[in-house]
Image (cartoon, rainbow, N blue to C red; front, side):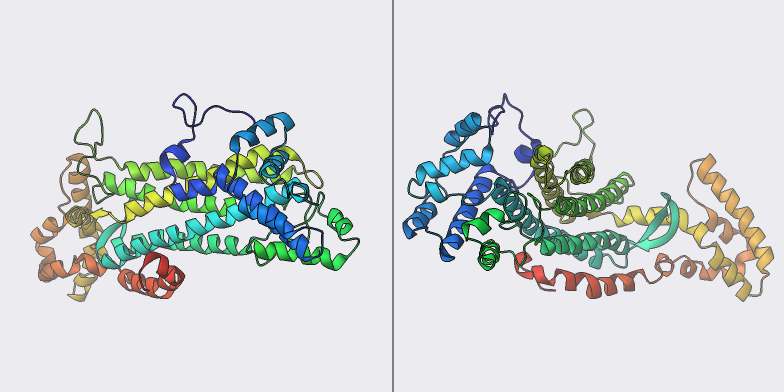
Amino acid sequence: MAAGGDHGSPDSYRSPLASRYASPEMCFVFSDRYKFRTWRQLWLWLAEAEQTLGLPITDEQIQEMKSNLDNIDFKMAAEEEERLRHDVMAHVHTFGHCCPQAAGIIHLGATSCYVGDNTDLIILRNALDLLLPKLARVISRLADFAKERASLPTLGFTHFQPAQLTTVGKRCCLWIQDLCMDLQNLKRVRDDLRFRGVKGTTGTQASFLQLFEGDDHKVEQLDKMVTDKAGFKRAFIITGQTYTRKVDIEVLSVLASLGASVHKICTDIRLLANLKEMEEPFEKQQIGSSAMPYKRNPMRSERCCSLARHLMTLVMDPLQTASVQWFERTLDDSANRRICLAEAFLTADTILNTLQNISEGLVVYPKVIERRIRQELPFMATENIIMAMVKAGGSRQDCHEKIRVLSQQAASVVKQEGGDNDLIERIQADAYFSPIHSQLDRLLDPSSFTGRASQQVQRFLEEEVYPLLKPYESVMKVSF
């Protein structure tokens, strides 16, 4: 607030996270209005608790504060901050200006971190509450996709080279499993959040002990009452001036891990789009390229990857901040945290909103998948063909040599001539393999190469995914 341009003007920089990408609800949680309104709420809660515990605060003062929680003069606050060079005291004066009766008891006994840190914790909690159902919704959409395609064979890749077959649904479950871990971690971090509470300048509660004339019990009651009013089950017993910045590490680590999951998923989708096996939604009027009108670029997945990289890097900020907090506190955390905490949540919000859009409109092209399987399956089926020949009375070694020679000839057609894999045609044309010619269709059935993939999908969804999503049924309006 102390400096900067007109952020609503096209002549001034504004973060694309707020202006272009993140949802209105997430932007509001990190807005100045929400922040400073929460400061006032915290001052009200403190005054109410202090009055209850016997300090000379009147009902009229309390009512005056209640009536002016939303009456924030941002212009006056900015002018006060420019004059005082202190954001909290600027808002103490601004709140006091519209609450003349209560002005003398606002911020009584507190330090700046009473409103600053406690507000940050409230914001972190509420921002996590926004992300959790969004992530659950993405998992739900992908679970529907996986269930529908649990038995659809597709070529597996290791090292991005053809490997044994899997199914489209099973591959999707790899994505879902990572996101389920993220959902559990987000919920854990949210539930583990503790309030800073009412601790004073260095965490000793000395100012409040003085206010209550050495009554230790009342100071503890004050801390608990304000913590309860803020909706937290627990507060830190030990703090310096701030809550430990390790909390920020834990929160942003989980968000960075989510970023890694989304990057992997969307990279897979981008690669599959290149193979023309799968595509993200593409609008009727959407333009893929200004120069190449035929292009159907996976721009949503590319956006997710781009932003996920940013999200993954942000955890370095709280790691370094926590490491250099001298003794009870240093102020070199402040400017950094204003940026990294908000950006992490706005970025996570954006990639989840975008991934939901992708997951609700994924398009699969079975015929393309089938053609790629036909190109690779003959090589994979050679072991089955050898076993069938042995059962028909042939020699395993003789058959192996025959298959080796024919396979190399077929590979030469594919690699040197750019032709299709004709190994099966060569086997059909070779009289040596006549005892099993009638079995070749069965031996080359793709579904016989996918193992237990479809059963794994069903079990995974029923035993792990749906129970995890159950608490979010009301938000998503579905039943698991």
